[in-house]
Length: 305
Image (cartoon, rainbow, N blue to C red; front, side, top):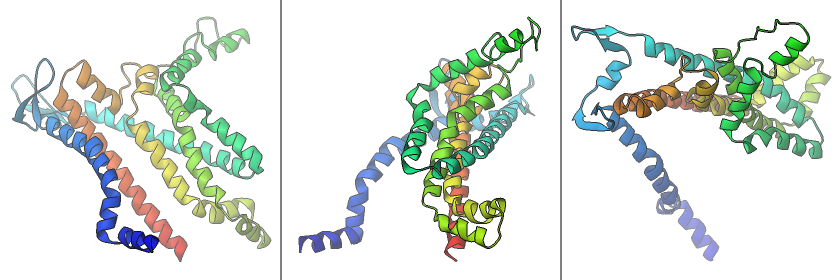
C-alpha cells in the first residue's frame, strides 16, 4: 500500500518537482548564478586596477572585433578572431585524432575476454591518476630541445648536435598535449556503446558476404553513434577551453580562448573583456551541445525505424 502511494506521488507533477528540486537548487546556485554574474560583468566598464564599474557598457564585446585608433575611431582588429580560429581548429583536430585513435582502441578492448577488458579499461584510466600539470610538464621534457626525442636522434647521427625537432612551443605541441589529455574521454564512451552491441549482427553481416570494413561501416559504426557523439562532446568542449596545454606547450605566442580569459582576469585586469570572451566560449559550447542533442535524437529515430 505504501509502495503504491509512494509510486503515485513520484508520478504526480508535485512528486516529480520535489524529486528534482534538490538537483535544480544545486544547478541554480553553482552554475546558473555564476553564469549570470559572468554575463553581467561582461556588460560593465572595467576598473583600471581590476574589478568593474557598475555601469552598462557593451565595449567588451566590441573589443573582440574592433579597436580604437588615435582618433578614437573603431577599426577592425582580427587578432582575437585568430585566437578563436586557432582554438576551434586545435580543438576540432584533437577531437578528430582522438576519434581515429580511440575507436580502434575501444573496438580492440570490447573484443577481448571479460577479465582482459577490465584490465585494459583500468590502463586507459591511469593517466587520470596524475595531475594534468605534471603531465604537461612531462611533455616539455619529451618535446623540448635536448629532450627524450632529440637525444636518441643525436646518438644515431640523424641530427646534428645543435639541431632539434623544434616541436615545443608550436601548434603541434599543443595538439599533442590535447590529444594525450583527452584521448581517454573518447575511448570510454565509445567502449560503453560498443559493449552493448549484439555481435551476432556483425556475424550475420559476414554470413551475407559483407567484408569486415563494410560490416564495420554499416553495422558497428551506426550502432556506436551515441558513444561517438558523447566522446566528441567530451573531447571538443574541454579542449576548446583548455589553457594548460596552450600555456605550457604553446608558449606565450600560441594563445587559445582559455589563455585569453585567464590573462584578462590576471595580468590585463580587464574583467569585462575576460567575461565577454568566456561568454563567447560558452556560446560555442552550447552550440556543440545542441548539435549533439539534435544528432543523437536523429540517430535514435533512425535506429528505431
